[in-house]
Image 1: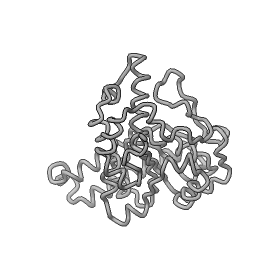
Image 2: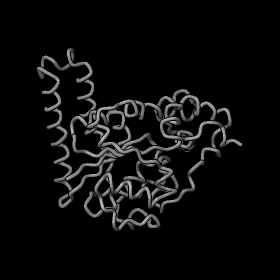
Image 3: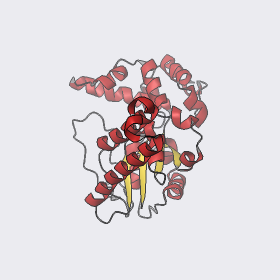
Image 4: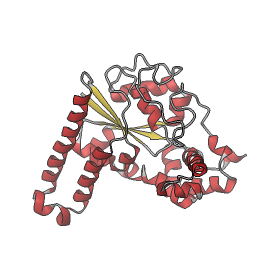
Amino acid sequence: MTTIFIGGVPRSGTTLMQSILCADRTTNPMLGEPFYFRKIVYAYKQTKQEFARRGGGFFGDPDKLRQFSADWVSRFLDQVRANHPGVDNLVIKEPLLTRHFIEVAELLPDARLVVMVRDPRDVIGSMIRVAERMGTKGTVPNNMAPALARDLDILCESVNSYYRELLRYRAPGVRRNLCFVFYEAVVGETMEALDKIRAFTGLELSDYRPEHDWNRNGAGFAPPDPDDPWPSALWGRPITAAPIGEYRTTLTGPEITTIERDCALLFESFGYPCDGAARR
C-alpha cells in the first residue's frame, strides 16, 4: 500500500492532480483537505525544532518523538483506509502541508510526495482573481486580503514559502520520494506528464482520459458550491492548456517584474523565463 500526498502552492493545480490520481481504480475518491493530519505533522515539526523546551521532558530524545509521531500519523491513515474498504493506495491532497513535507517524509519514509509547480505569475494572477470574486461577495478572509490589495511582497513570499525548504533540502531519503510536477506539462504535454506520474507513484492510471471530465474518469468528487469563489471555471472539466499565461490578463508590467524579482529562486530552480519576454 502506498500513500501519495499532493502538495504545492494553492492555485498550482493540486486539485487537478488529485482528480488524476483518484481516477485510478486502486485509489480512494477525492477527499477534502485533512486539517487534522496537518496539525499532527505540525505538532511534530514544532516540537522537533524546539525539542529542549517542548519535548525533552516528555520523549527523552528526538527519535522517540519521531517514533511516537509516526505511530500517530499511521493510525490516522489506517482510519482513512478503514473508511474506504478495498482501497490499496491513498491519495491525500493538502497544499498547506507542503511546508511540512520534510517532516511527512521523516514520519512516513515510504510515502510519495507529489509537489505541483506552476509559473508564479499565473499562481499570483489566479489568487488575485479569486480575491476579486470574494470581494464582490463581501467575504474576503484575512489570508486573501493581500491578494485583493495586490500586495505583491506578501504574495511572493507566500508562494516562495511553499518550495524554499524542499529546494534546499538534500537528504537522499526525502529527495528520493519527492517529485516536482509542472502544471504546464500536465495540461500541455499530458501524456508525457502521465508517464512521469505513473513511474513515480506506481499507479497504472490505465483508464484515465484527459478529454473526460473528472467524474467520468471516476475521481468521485462532489461538485463545488456555485457560489464558492475559490474553484476555477475549469473545475471538474477536461484538461486544457488555456490557463497557461493567463496572468497577462490580470497583472500589469510592473507587477510581473516584481514577481520575477521576488520569486527569483523559483524562476531559476524550475526554469521559468524571468527576462520580461512575456511582456513583448
